[in-house]
Image (cartoon, rainbow, N blue to C red; front, top):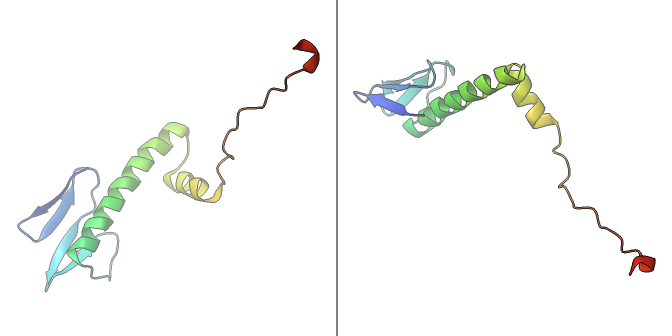
Length: 95
C-alpha cells in the first residue's frame, strides 16, 4: 500500500481509485466522503482505509462473499472461545 501526494494537491494510491484533493488552507476532500473537509492526516487515513477495503474485497471474493458481507460478519460474529487442550484424566487403576 502506497499513498502518494502529487504536487501537494492530489493524493492517490496504487491500491484504490479513490483520491483526495487539496482545497487550500490545509483542507482536503476525499472522493468517497463528499461534503467533508479533512486535514491531510485524516485524508491520508481515509485513503488508507479505502486501500484496506480493496484488500478485504479481494479476499472476500475468494470466500464467495461481498466486501460488506465479510466486514459485517467479522464485526457481528463472536470469535470462538480460546481453544483449551482437554485435560486427560489419569486413571488410577492404570498407574
